[in-house]
Image 1 (cartoon, rainbow, N blue to C red):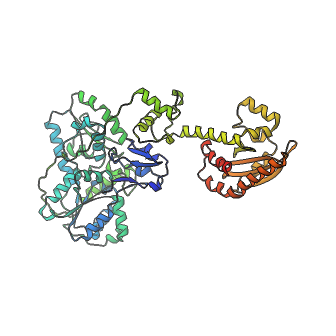
Image 2 (image 1 turned 180 degrees about the horizontal axis):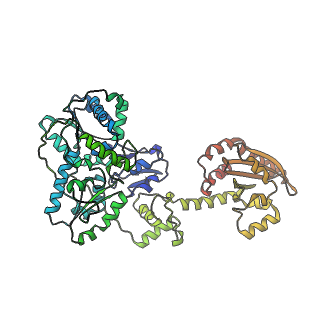
Image 3 (image 1 turned 90 degrees about the horizontal axis):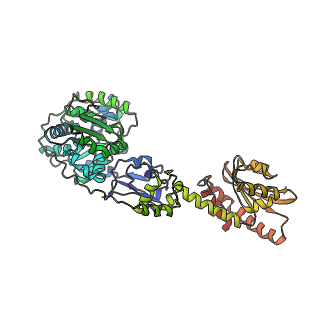
Length: 568
């Protein structure tokens, strides 16, 4: 079975945005492509949302869903309570009708199981000697604790999530014992949870997948609204757990008198808040007071899951959920007496991460390998995706990163290489930005400028940043070259010398490369250089324009154009 989250390596653009966004850095960079490390992933789905190239994907269960609905077997849709936050009230009934038209035999809200999970969790909290208890409804939070804080497993409520309990409840009904059950939610992590429980569902699809499936099948809500919905299509009804997917929803279900800032009940959402709290759970335990922690990985609760089909704000979605839940309860439901089912989460067993420790000597050696020879070299710019240089060094040690990810070091090395290339060229080369400020220039350019330019270069130590208009008399030709992608060639006077000036746009309207050849040199050198540069200009001007799109204004990227010219 394909991993829940994976990378289309051909589409990966080596930008490290997934590394930066991943709260647990479960991304491995290899051969300049970013892949998810399944054993370290908590399946929050952040990398999928931020990938600009769409290279990060999750397993598509739509083909499985299609096969199930065409199999002739009964197929039950188990819908997460958060589905009611996706619609305005007038679309709730058409949505249910769309499920019926798609071929589902029945629909059941997972909030029914949330009622039982809340009761079991509350009973455990009140009947055990634990001081701190963590709710287990969010699989991403459970993954995080089991992988990264295995010592905190004892604080997890020994109760399966509503999704798992709901599947058990549906399949415990004689009528649906052999039915296929499909879970529908905005959560990518639920796919992984189902896998862990041995595929307790026949398919787990996100809201995005479902609405895409409707589109493929030619089902839209306007058309569905005209269909008749059987009165027994909705199995059972939740008593109080319909508000489960918002902050504090589980707490309200467990104890209607509790407040989310109650000393005994606290609700938090957002993965970084969860991580921060986990570090402090031993302190909370030592306080000796009963405390229930409801934690969800998505900011605002499940209604803001990564694959929700609608991008409305938390406020809008909460308002919809409250309104639609009240409406949903007025619809005809089939009275169902769901049997008692096991509530245990004992099958949820995944290996924890082995924590590696590195000596200061090892860290320093790795830092030096990327040019960080002193504390001042540790810029902690996060360009590599890691929070600081030391974390990047640890990732190198663990084989999750490559030294080329250090942008600042690569820029420094490329600057050095570019300067070496410039120094070897037999003609003057200068690169300027749109304000005619020097980005780089070689020694030959300085020599061509005479004693005054030599004195200025020696005094300043570098001409980088200098205004070209104050350095050479032919600066006006550069300004006229901005605005198009053509190669411009001129013969101009430079003091007492005649020079051949070739101006190549490197980045349109941003960077120009000037090649200056002294026409007063010996005939042999003139012919050699002219032939060399002429060949470059004729054969590579178009290539220069093509690669301009991937060139930036950093010295690291200037190297590409300089190397192209030097090697031809």
